[in-house]
Picture (spheres, rainbow, N blue to C red):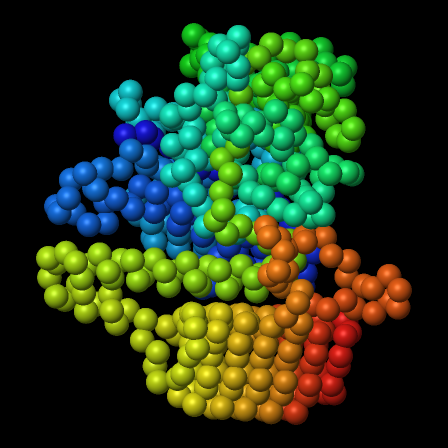
Length: 526
C-alpha cells in the first residue's frame, strides 16, 4: 500500500476579500457548502480514497484492496489557532482513521513557501516501518471545489511509462497537476499549461497570461514526490542569493541527502527567530511549475509574462505531468461561486448515496444496515424538489417547499408556506411564513420576515451552458463600468441581518447587522 499525506492550503484572514461579507464572520475555508465546510470536502475526498474499496468487507477481496491510503491531512495557513479549533475537533471525530492537524505559518509565505517552511513535518514518517514512509503527498488549494479525481492522479503519477523523446531518457515525475479545459477567452484567468498529449508532460506554464497560451488550465490540486523539495530548495537558494543573503548557502537537498536526519535535527535546534527569518515567499505556480516546465525539454519560450523570479540554468531533475479531467471543477472566489458549488456537491452526495445503496442491495448484508441507510435523511414532512440538504437540527414546516439545490444549516427555522430554491440558508437563520428565497445566501442568525421576496440573479452563478468547457469567470467586476450600478449577482444577507415583513430584496448585498425596513434593488447596503 502506498502511504500518502495531504496538505490543504487555506490561506489567512487577508485573503478571501471577494468573498465578503460571508467571510467577515467565518473563515472562508469553513464556509458551509452542501452541509459541509468547504475544506471538509477536500478531507472527505482524501478519506474516501482509502475507503472506497474497503467500505464492503469480506465479499470480494479484489475489490477490497486499495493501493493508496491518505493517513494524515495537514491544514496549512495563517489563521489564528482558535479560529480552527472547533473545526479540527469535529473533523477528527468525523474521520477517526485520519490524523488531522493545523500548521500555522509565521506569515503569508505563498503556496510553495509554506510547504518549504514545514517540509520536515510534511516528510515525517507515518511510522517506524519502511512501508510507512511518505511516498507522495497531495497539495490542494483550499478554495477549489471539485469532484476530485485523486485515484486517477495517483495512477498517472506512479505508473508513468512515457518518454519525452527517443533521444532522451526517462525522468522521474516530481509533480502531477490536476488540469481541466476551459474556453479560449476564459483561459487567461487561470494558470495555462502547454501539455504533450502523448506523454502528458507539461512543456510550458504561464500564470494568468495576457494573451492566449492554452485552454488547458491548472486546477490547483497537485500530487508531489518528496523529491520536489529538491527543486524548491534550489529556488529558495537562488532567490536568497539574488536578495544578497549569502548565508543561505547551507541549503541542502532534504530528500536525497544521506545525512537527512542530522540536517533535520540541526534545523530544529536553530532559534525560532532565525528559522522564521529564513522563510521566504515562494509560489507553486509562478516559481515551481515554471521551473519544472522549463526543465521538461520544451522548445517553448519562457518569456512573455514576466512572472518568474528565478533562473532556469539548473539541470533537469524531473518532470511535471498534467492529469486532465472532465470532472466538475470550480473555484470559490466569490459568493456566487458558492451557489454553483452547492449545486454540484449536493448532486455528488446524492450520486454516492445511490451507488452505496445499490451495492448494499446486491450484497448479502443484514437487513438493518439496508434500512438504516435508506432512512438516514428523512424529509420530516416538508416537500422537496431535486437535491436538498437539511441539517437534522433545523426546523422546517411541513408546508414549506425546498429545492432544487438548497442547503439549510444547523438550527435554522423555515416557517409555513416558505419557498426556497438554489440557495444556502446558514446556521440559526429564520425565514418567515410565505416568503420566497431564490439564488441567495441567508447569513448566520439573519431573520427574514413574513411575505418577503429575497432574490438574486441566476446568470452570475452559472457558466454559459451553450459553450463547451465554459467555467465560472473568477474575476467579474462588482460594478458596471458604464453606469456604475451593481452587476447581476446573488443576493447576500450578512450575519445578523433583519429583514422586516413584506420587503422585496433583489440583486443586493447586505452587510452584517443591518435592519431593512424597505425594499432594495441592485444595491449594496452598508
